[in-house]
Image (cartoon, rainbow, N blue to C red; front, side):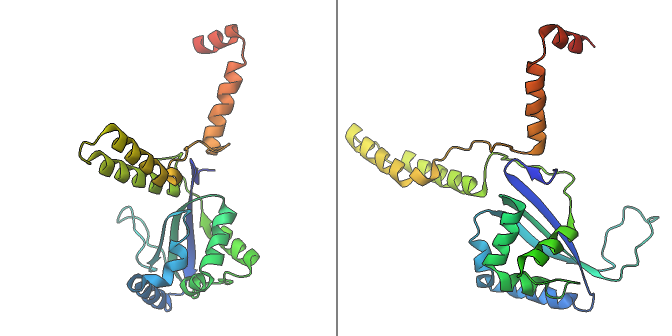
Length: 224
């Protein structure tokens, strides 16, 4: 389960695209960047940390050394990278519901793309082309994307509150209570989920097992 780091999930999908239609996808990506409203449904999904599409031509794959044989690839490849909160199914379904036409536009020229609706063929397509994340680092494992946004809002509000001129105790308390009311939706507790990640679960499981050992067995294990 290396795709998971804390509350975040990393997805990497690599799909083949015919080299002679890859330029059409590049044109679509260029239009989407110039007209952000085309991605409005995607931007409103708060569970997404990051999403990016990249097209690599059949002769653009990197090589570690001049001695490494070059591949003779039949297709170009479209790489999709994303980080999100929630389950795999929630994320893929959210994409399908938020921008079904956008997904079909982005992946239209990819080999054997089944369209985003119905969901089952689309799920099978993504799973078949998904590459496992071998190493995944998350700087804030207990935070969702909304937690990070809330922390940013609280920080800015506190800085503005701190910069206010000295006032009476009564005025200070009035402003302080108003501050709390304005931030009440941003003061949630960042607690771990029941299983923050599979690696964290294994650590907790081992700690519970070790705590249940008799003291003499613990000493013998440390001595060994």
